[in-house]
Image (cartoon, rainbow, N blue to C red; front, top):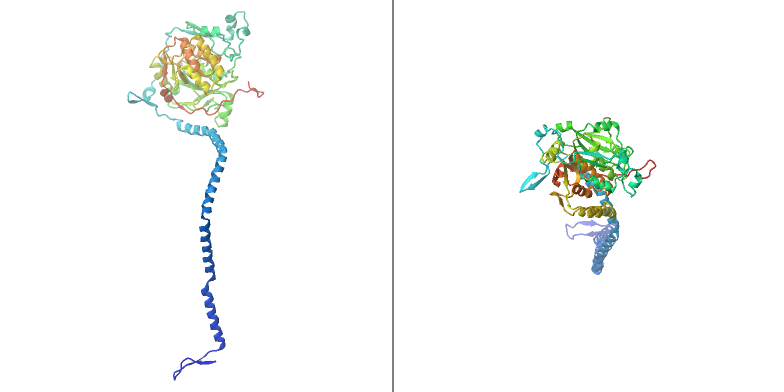
Length: 481
């Protein structure tokens, strides 16, 4: 088919076939279909539907998150007992963590403890400077100037003389912790022991060869060479051993450091890699292994080296006792000069930091479950019967002491005092704070005693606290002794 585009002389003829017309029509149809974009219309319709639904249900949509939050809180409240249990478990674990942190921070500290006096900050322990400590010497021994010149210790060999024709069972029938180590002190003997005479006769441990607290001959020989001794003990696998610090070269040459352990403590320490050397030392400490401890109560076993140092070190003139929870951090000779020689004292012990009255201390002991109410009441009843006043000061000194550090000269009078104190601890409770003021009040003649303030005690030692609880004594058959 032929058509004319223009008419006239210059017209041009273009031939168009039927097939070409069809192709053009198809193109137009495709273009029209592309413009429709049906997917866009669907998307627009979906958006519109969503908007309409949101407008209709917005209240419900706001309520659902609130309801979910409420359910979550309710479930949390329901789980709180488990959380408390976890926190209690953590609390049981925390002391060990805090203890380790405190141990790391306190160990090997040498910085002085200070306090403000009259607006001026001063060192609590006024120890000599290092250059003077190097030349410090032990003063010559002098004759005792007080009434007590000699102390005789009662032993099993004295039994016929003391009780005549009476049998031992007749003299001691009531149940108590007295045994073949302590001897069986009667109430009558107890009363007479406080009478200060030129020659004092007193029970003071080591009553019988079969009483226990056995020490090897080699250790005994070493201990007899000590003139000045710093001692501690850990029985039942209790506390770790802390090396002393802060001493002068002079003290290293003149002072013995002795730690008393039992086999349980030795095994516990070996598990931690602390083995006793072939020379019987760990660091500066001479380790003395004690066998056949006389008491099932490890606290009572610990009172033997604490209070009866004059029996363990018969040649020593001075001793410093340090509880196993502490690290001794001062020069021993400097401590003797500051706390004994300078004030002409034979015994130095720290004041109690919290209380002053023995009766207040008794209430605190019961409240903290350190002893039963019954045994504390027995002790207080006896003290009231003996006339112990409720005074908070004796001879101008605070009545109550904290005995983690004891510094003393081994004179007949101070030795007698420690024997009497030990007997009270055996007869009544193991809490020596209760029996100290009674012994001091009852003996009466011990005047030259230095009760130093708490801050001085803190300057003497780095306190780490008790690491673990001591294990009770166990027989070879696995039963408690």
